[in-house]
Amino acid sequence: MIKVGDKLPEATFGVVTPSGPATKTTSEVFSGRKVALFAVPGAFTPTCHNNHLPGFLANADKFKEKGVDAIACLAVNDVFVMDAWAKATGAGETIEFLADGSALFSKATGLELDITERGMGIRSQRYAMLVDDGVVTILNIGDEPGKTDITGAEALLAAM
Image 1 (cartoon, rainbow, N blue to C red):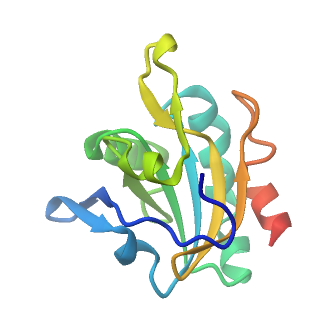
Image 2: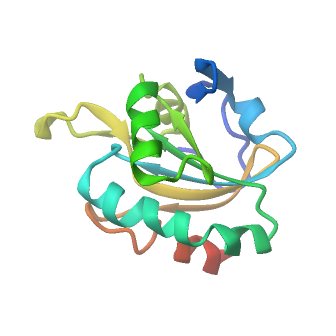
């Protein structure tokens, strides 16, 4: 499993651009920038939609004040679902939505979550990390389903 001090693995994320679906690599998202990355098990799921994402959106200015260049949200959903979620929440202008559709990044970091028994397949664990030029400097991994006290925006800000 990835830990503080590790460089993020190379992967490709689905993103939506003005001209439609595209891809970005880990390097394109994280190189030369300080990024607050949070991951959720699924777009539109209750805790992710009602608790996790809104905290990062509401605290975007506080992250900028602490030198964060971007906030990114990752989920094991396809690019179209992530785009719909960005639009539905109004967060697309503030947060970069990264689709890890086949969970390749999640598996490469060791942060995948198998919730097949609940009908959701392989997803991402709930976490928040601060990444500086591709290197993890803070990593908060959720330890209880449905809770964001460890992985929420406030906890990441406090750790900074």
